[in-house]
Amino acid sequence: MSPSSSQLRIGIVCYPTFGGSGVVATELGKALAVQGHEVHFITYNLPVRLGSFHPRVFYHEVEVSKYPLFEYPPYELVLTSKMVEVAQTHNLNLLHVHYAIPHASAAVNAKQILAEADLHVPVVTTLHGTDITLLGKDPSFKPVITHAINASDAVTTVSQSLKEDTQRLFGVTRDIDVVHNFICPKHFDRPADLEFRKQLSPSGAPILCHISNFRPVKRIDDVVKVFAKVRAERECTLLMVGDGPERGNAEALSRELGVAEDVVFLGKVKNPIEPLLISDLLLLPSETESFGLVALEAMAAGVPVVSSNVGGLPEVNAQGKTGFLRPVGDVEGMAQDCLQVLDDTRLPAFRDQAKGRSQLFHIERILPQYLAVYGRALTLNPA
Ligand code: GMT
Image (cartoon, rainbow, N blue to C red):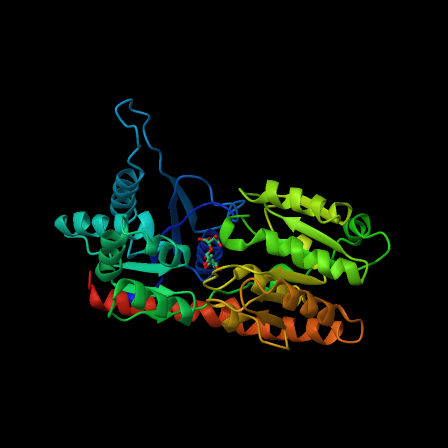
């Protein structure tokens, strides 16, 4: 039986942190294992969403030595060696790497080393966004990212918009498959923690929520400014979930704008579903967003989204149905949109439409698309 038609042994490389790319990679790996494939995560820390034991899932830690000569520890090289070792030991059929730098470039190097030992392991690269839209603008990475994209056996992007950005910024002409990010609806099938909601909003006033890594690209100041305008019109609470470099500024701004009493900074949480289940609206005014996984997660929790209209967000958030979209920085417009969504007579329809649309991104629709990409990469590289 050819590997493309049987159960596969797949190496998955991702960032193990809270970011969307790591979440997508981890949930994909778990879903592949449920289908009977063997999945080997290769990364420097246990992925946050991996959690407890899953049958057919293995974790291989990449440890960089602290040799004093290394002012900059060579993580990419150690990762490459680890991929080679895991591929040889577990007879991997395929490497699926998430994020171009350094994962895709390490993988194409590993593939070459393995080929010298007559082991043919195709590389599937999934581009997630900042690897293209932010790092792609940095000339110091460009040759390496371009090579990694061209030398991969298959490349996927998480939105049509990111595919176009990749072609434009890197002059890439090769085939790229768009495979949208996904949700596992069963994760959302649980009751909201009403005690938690009551603590945040004792009067029952709406809760607006923002979840991110608080990096400049998320425009955290806009979140606070939009909230201040909405708060001037009606009682509400802002729940800020996550942490990062912009948190201090956002805390200061909420004091400056006189809304600090109604803003709760929760910090990092392992899983955003709990705060989403007690929220009425997600605010995502990002500067760029290749997909906006958190917007999809909000929708799956029945929470409408007010977002910017950049990147892949229009592929997720449907104008006037699951929420609204505005140009980056349109704080006034976003505040108006929030008030419309939160209108008691309209909110239930927005909630239903958000949940309904999220089903288009059901893992059961997306997983076969990845398997089709794997199948093609394997056909190009017969063992
Ligand atoms: O948003 C971030 O800064 C994290 C980053 C990541 O690498 O995890 O997110 C990117 O990948 C996500 C998963 O595919 C996408 O949903 C996010 O839109 C994308 N972030 C940006 O494009 C800014």
